[in-house]
Image (tube, rainbow, N blue to C red; front, side, top):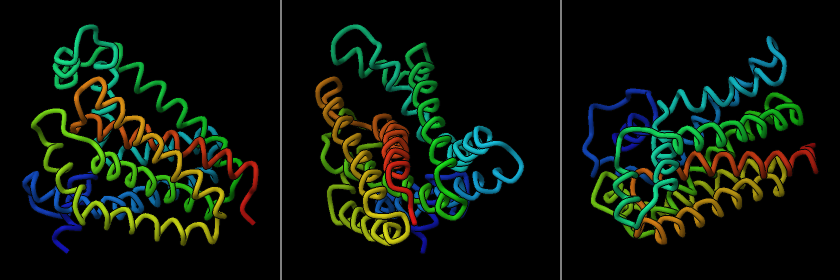
Length: 255
């Protein structure tokens, strides 16, 4: 129970536990999908509730904002840092320096705007294609898939530098990461009973492909991944999962 509270306190703005060390947080990594499911439920309920008051574009925006706010924009920081680092000129050392720099530049702004604009557009398609309860389940499936992508990237990638992400990578390579992936797959299988296997498989596959691509980018450009790239994985995997899920649901709406 302590580990679950630690996971919620670290990955969201919900203060369920006293401050924990990064090692303790890393040991709770297998519960990231549980946190993701809760975040997805909150975002889905926000979008569903907003549909009664606003048109679909506003409801989609509120669903996305709910997902970001409940996590305290925790992973957005990593996406912003990665955006700046990818724009940096120079070798690997220079890119790592920019990745760790706390100031934000045009690369950060571009990464954030493009990612959330595409995510909102996919959400808009999704919220118009499915009704309330199904939309909530879609959001849960998306957020589950993004946390699985986070665990997989951490498990398959070397560490680029010593930092908060190092302990997380080490924990994800053991039974904790494996347990987290199994929990996610079990939950997605349950969701598939309502949404259909095509939709849930599409979301999970898109998220995992994002994890693999970011692992490759991390190895090639930074010598591995760290906390920033792991954070970016969540945001970019959400965008990819939303796009894939929206396309699948539009092609074959749930019964």
